[in-house]
Image (cartoon, rainbow, N blue to C red; front, side, top):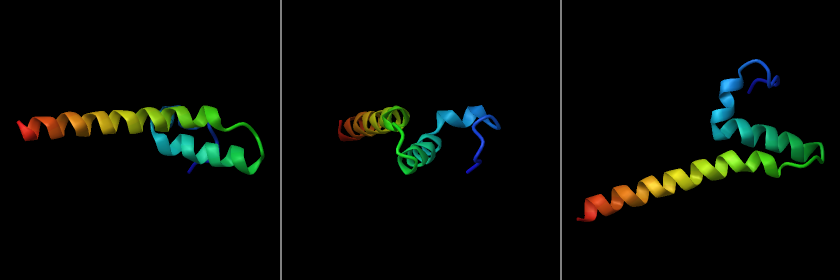
Length: 59
């Protein structure tokens, strides 16, 4: 992972970017909850897509 946030700002779309910097925040005893928002959104979206796919397969 690039240690500079300015190098590739488009990486902020992916959850691994936020997890990486969230772990850095934990390491330095700084607030990290803001970094959990994007992974939570991705997780919710994936679960929703899986449920809708499963319902289509069932009927």
